[in-house]
Amino acid sequence: MRITVDLKEVKEGLAKLDTKTREAGENAMRDIVVLITNDAIYGSPVLTGNNRRSIKFEAKGLSGSVYSTSGYGGYLETGTVRMPARPYLKPALDKNLPKFPNIMKGYMKW
Image 1 (cartoon, rainbow, N blue to C red):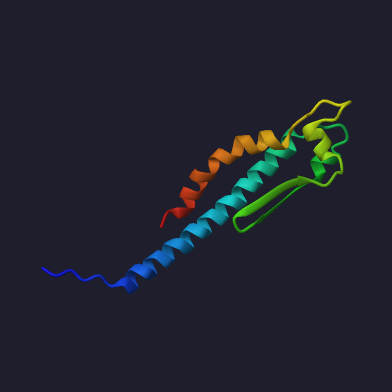
Image 2: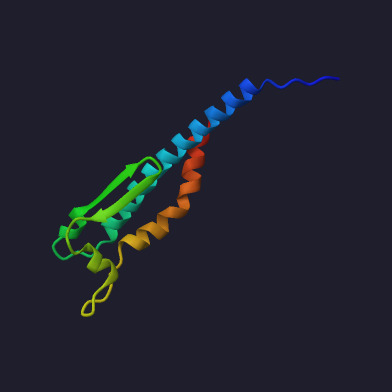
């Protein structure tokens, strides 16, 4: 018995899988960053609403950022000597990050 494997087909299949996996990861990252942003906005302390309005996000490739441009969002998150912390970013991250694998699996369906 003789078995022959065409490595060209194997390499092409692996390349397609790599591309599909990367696309799924990028799409899942975008979705997760949006979910985290929405929960951060909802959880942000409100006095004037300025910090809520200043929460932005970026998702590019396999990395993403959620941040506040208010100038004091970090103080709200971590607190100061005179003000207790009122975290809103970390709870949003903790709530949504575990969803990443399932979201990515959803994009992996062929």
